[in-house]
Length: 244
Image 1 (spheres, rainbow, N blue to C red):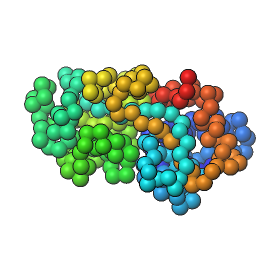
Image 2 (cartoon, rainbow, N blue to C red):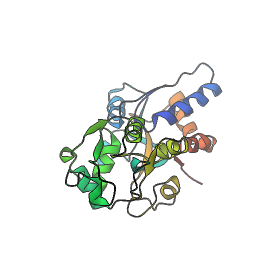
Image 3 (cartoon, helix red, strand yellow):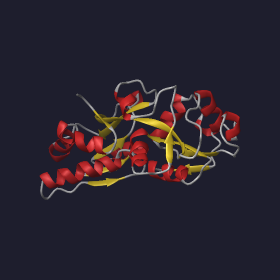
Image 4 (cartoon, rainbow, N blue to C red):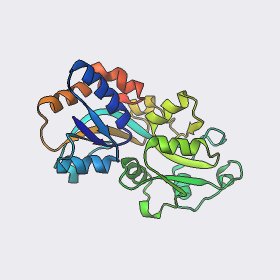
């Protein structure tokens, strides 16, 4: 079974695949990244069995079938040493558009802000620009990153950096001792709890997508991935399981 796409979903997909392989001897689950756009494109072209897309499907994407597997949010992150604990939507917009370029302007320590942005084709970028009503082409990025871990490591080593990544991945890394901090968004704490109760403003569905109605092993793997039997794996990756 070949999966490709979202770097947000990939670590979870690998865990799901490993357990599925144990329960189904002889089966191999291969997980490749490349972003949600790749996952969609590969599914349409028949280059994968399952695409991974870390956002809801749009009306223009009804040519593929979505299979929800979990919930997540997008957190604004800064270095753990940054005294800032929250920014308004307007301040975040102004930082990403280059109108605010020093932390002192938003109550932080003096220092030129390093803007970390996601690469084109990443669903995290699409959700971020949609929520903040930003034209992605106008973002003044100092560093462009691909997957979540790259963004987190970039912010963790730069006291003046700001970025945005999966809430689940960021919480997981904070627990591991990585030096980042999740900022409140719209006054709401960025956490799995606020994603689960629906109060966090930048939430998203994590999806598997298929070109056609799945059959055989692919159908079995998708149903397995949606079952309560894997809630521990979903929570282990700091995402929110569907259902009770």
